[in-house]
Image 1 (cartoon, one colour):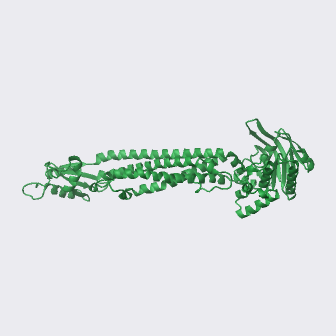
Image 2 (tube, rainbow over the protein chains, first blue to last red):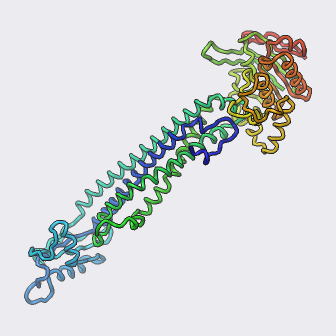
Image 3 (tube, each protein chain N blue to C red):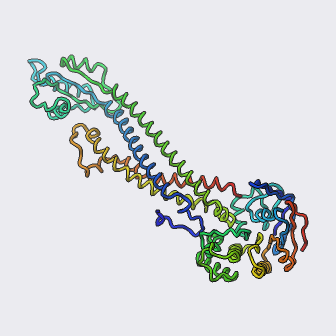
Length: 309
Length: 224
């Protein structure tokens, strides 16, 4: 297997027989598959953490009952528009947006069904995105209520803080899982190398006595395990794309910006939905597997060779 | 030149242990020595030591002008091994390889060009009478042919020292004398030769100085 990729040399080491090629290939495939899923988990946790830290925490939701009524009989300005104007003045640099009827319908449909003909009095909803690092004045709620009675201000900070901590813990767990997967890969490659060394002990002794250097022997083993790990890494990463694509399709409505929430995306649209940093990490995974294989084998063989002068 | 002074060496084995005590001798470059002694006297251990397969625990060992000890860098030992050839008692051929590839090993490990390797190996195989066997698997050869393949591998890189451990064990008398003539020819060309043997007929046929080992002690050194 894979011998077309790995031409042997005429030195008798016959590593295609000495190393359990298929076992190593399939083990690395499975480990890379797990690593790809773990990387995705870590990437997702990091994105959530950042999103909640920089996005959701900076959002204010303001509800205005009877939004289209005028503030008092003298003024023609509606209650909602009065609040919007006050917010724009009180929170410079913020983006103040009153949800349109269509957006409000879209937001509430999952909970209330089709609300076009609903007789329920719905409040006006105003979304305020504060500049990063800023916070609203403490008396904002009082100010708005003085202006338009019944206005309520919801701050997302408290929830987003909790969610941020949750996301950070998820990220730590994913990192630990990645470390564990790397450790398992290293141990498997080390054991495989030891097996190969044991089965080729006599030939290595002969080559050593004929003047083979440690570099030569370690290089022969390491290049083989490195290439097998690369092939296993490619295979495992490609395999992981199947569940990841399904996962991303399922998650698309939740990860898309609120205004664009729709049905499940078409399959061809999915390539654009994979985060670029995740794609980079997945592309690097086979090479990391190869590097782990090469380095582990070099270390094991060189330590083993120390028993010879 | 080979020079050992008060060399002590020991290796634990499953069945007892091998020991060399206080070994002292000198062989000038181009010298010849028979290495004699009963079984278990330490002849193979001494040859393995001279082939740098192990290192002395105490004492001084100087091979081809280089001092050899536990502190000698591994790269220096590799360079020295390229200047030594050894024919092992059990031939130490790699049976997965053809006769040609077995003999080519020392040259390939020295990263010589393939065309040069091909030329040298064919010439040496003709010299030992195996010119027609180059492509054969070494496992399919007779004992005598394997012995000559091992000799070809030991000399193909033109070493300055040749060590041979019971090289005529598996050979008929005529083959043994032919092999001895090959060693003599190499020695005449300036190669230092040490041959461990039980075969007294060989020693009588070619009277040369000898080292005699008994229980790991060098009991007698014949002069040149």
